[in-house]
Length: 565
Image (cartoon, rainbow, N blue to C red; front, side, top):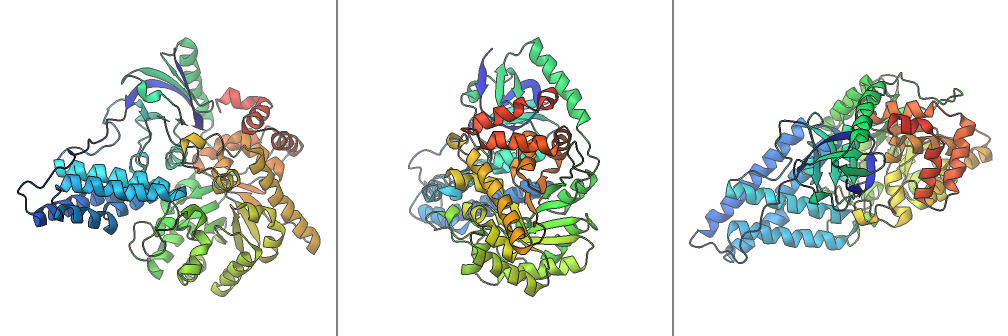
């Protein structure tokens, strides 16, 4: 029995045969020339292949939802990226074959993005994925992707392109294991949204032979080859236990009755309808990028209104927290962001795009207000990447001008956490985005597997910033003689049942996560009182590191082991 260790992304204990992602499309021969083919015909064939790839990705996007839909649409845009195709056509004009031209052009664009660092480095994978798909189209062979297998299997890969991850079929894929990637990568986020047991950054797993039966423990981040009776029993027990966590009664609370509303992170109306059916207590994060990604130009007013209203209508009378457009970095938009920034993760993204392209944010707020007026939801609006009290005040003024009475801010930047008291003078609530807060606090790109240990929301420094935000809200209230304004968490950390207990102990007022995680989080929260949650929070924040913090808290929550969480 061989054990492979990685970072657990989604809990679950399953056993099954491994299917290894097929080899990548091989490179055309170096220096391959047109060899008598007319350059204009070769360029036309290349553009036709690119359009076919884009159409196929968009078709897959039409069958996906939420995060998957957004990722596929963004990748589809890359298939017809003018910079990529223009570079390839130039190489064809210089005598290169169409396959060699797109291959070399893809190398050039991917290298440029990789050198930019931060989020843009992750986009380099999209370019290489698109390049391989175009070459496959030119060759008339199947595009790279998930293995076509009739029986359920455990998918093992070096890493997955967003286009592949977004369309994983949970009915066939029992679990997901990758050698690369990080806990906040596209692969990890979409695995969580699908409820797939998943482990990332597990070095050596791609050496497993196709068909090998393995045991995957998504909570422990462990993969065991040739498992025995003990692992088979654990997997069978998990299947039974998981069925008991399939529902939520609509009230998040602790053992002593303290209420902690559990809301859903959604990417569109389809997600919202599913979340409402799962009894989520509203929406804690509506990612409005779903309305913009896949567009070459800014979507019009009526299109935006209809998209937002579809979400609002799923939750009449309940809170829906809307995050304004979080463009930039790993979510570039051709009409809004600058791909040439030297460090996009620290560049013009989120709220900051209003500095360089004023008007887009105001028009989005107008569309949100119109959708709000036509629905019965309790709509709150927050801006991403707010760093100062002046920015918070400016956003609040923009919301007021649009007729939106409840403005808020995302706390993703350490400066926002440390000055939350002053930010909350201007707005009505704050929501902590733990994904970005962790990578900025630890200076660790959340997409990179080698930095997975640093990029962990259990890091005591990150927990200290959460506490600083809650303390800032309390200080702001004390200064004004009022009740503290709400501070919720809408990052992926809320989906970890053990960490959810810590967050509750730190004083956050609500938790928002993928709807699939709500039943498990609710079950664990109901085993602790508020006092016990505070004790566990103190234990975690006083630990020397993330591993120690997680282990100490989990040891005090026996239900986690019982349920395989």
